Length: 411
Ligand SMILES: NC(=O)c1ccc[n+]([C@@H]2O[C@H](COP(=O)([O-])OP(=O)(O)OC[C@H]3O[C@@H](n4cnc5c(N)ncnc54)[C@H](O)[C@@H]3O)[C@@H](O)[C@H]2O)c1
Image (cartoon, rainbow, N blue to C red; front, top):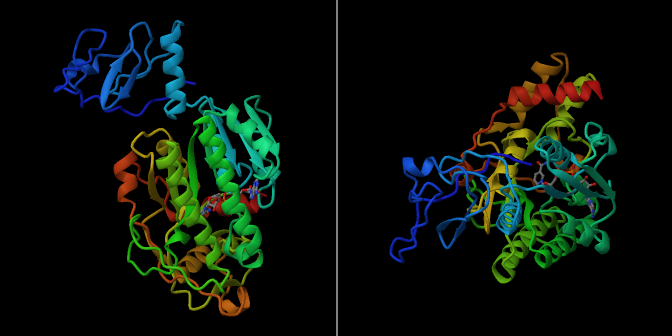
C-alpha cells in the first residue's frame, strides 16, 4: 500500500559530526528547495540524521512528502519497507482489537480503503457483526472471534500485523457500573497481554484511553499533563477511568523499559453511526428516543457540559498519530473542543429529529444507581494533537446528529 507519508524531519542533519547526508542528486538533506527535489530514494532517520539508502527506490521526499512506488528489489528496499511498516508510515497490515465495535469498525473501513490488510480480534461483547457488513467481503479483511485472553490467537495476530490498534475494552458507564469485575479484567489484563506480545514482536501500538482518566477534575479544558482526580473505590463508576489510567501507565512503562513504540489517545465523547445507546451513550440514546416519539430523558439538571467529535474525525487522528514518529511515547486528547450543555443537545436533537418530542429530566439515581457521581464539565485542550498532526475536525454537531439519525432510522 502506498500512502502519503508524513513529512519527515530532514532539516536536522548533524552538521557538527559532519554527517551531511546527500540526496541522490547530491544535494544536502536540509529542507531546502534542492532537498524538495529528492524524490527517488528511500529515507530513514537515525539520531536526527536523514539517511538516503543507495539502491533503494523512492518512498517520499522527507520535506515535501511526495511519494512514489517502491521499485526494484534488494536488501535496501526490503529493510526500508520493513522500517516504514514498523514505524506505521507505510503499514501494510494492522490488527484492530475491538474492531467490531463502534470506533473499530470505522477504523477498519478506513484502513481497508487505504489498501491495508486488516485483522480484527473481537469477542462481540458490545461489538456487532453488522458493523462489519460493508467490509466483510474484502479479501484483505480477516475477522477472528475471540477474547483478549485467548493468548495464542492474540500472539498470532500480533505477529501478522505491522501495527496494532488496541480498542477492545469494557465500555460505557452503564456497563461499567453493572459489571465492575469484567471492566477491570478486560481493561487491565487484556491491555497487558496486548502490550506484552507487541513488545515481543516490536509492533507499534496505539492504546485507546478515555477522558474518564481525568476523573472529577474541574479544569475548564483538560490538558494531558493535568492531575487525575478519582472518587472513592466504593463507587464502581471510577473503576473505568482508573483502569484506563493503569493502561496508560503500562503503555508508557513498556515504551520506556522495553522500547515499545506506544501512542496513547484519550477519547472525549466520540459519536456517529453505529454507536449504540443502551450502554449509556447520550447521543444515540437521545436520537433514538426522539425517533420513537419521545420523551428525551435528560439526567439530572442537564447543565453538564460535553463536546462531541465525529468518529471519522477520530479515525483521522488515530491514523495520523499512528504514522507519526513524534507521537511515540506521548498521550493525546482526541475530541472536539466545542462545548455544549446536555440540555442544549436535547433541544438540538428535538429540533432536528422530532419537534413533537418532550424533554424530561430524571435523577441519576433512577438512571444508574444510588450515589452515582457524574462530571459537570468535560472539555479537552486539543492543542497537543493539533501541533502533532495538524488536524481540525471536519464535522460539526449538526452533521453528527444528521448522520446518527440517518443511521438509526435506516437500521
Ligand atoms: N466512544 C467513545 O466516545 C469513547 C470514549 C472514550 C474511550 N473510548 C475507548 O475507545 C475504545 C473503543 O470504544 P467504542 O466506543 O468503539 O466501544 P465499543 O463497545 O463499540 O467497542 C469495543 C469493542 O471491544 C470488544 N471487546 C470488549 N471486550 C473484549 C475482549 N475482552 N476481547 C475482545 N474484544 C472485546 C467489544 O465487543 C467491542 O466490539 C474503547 O477502548 C473505549 O474505552 C471510546
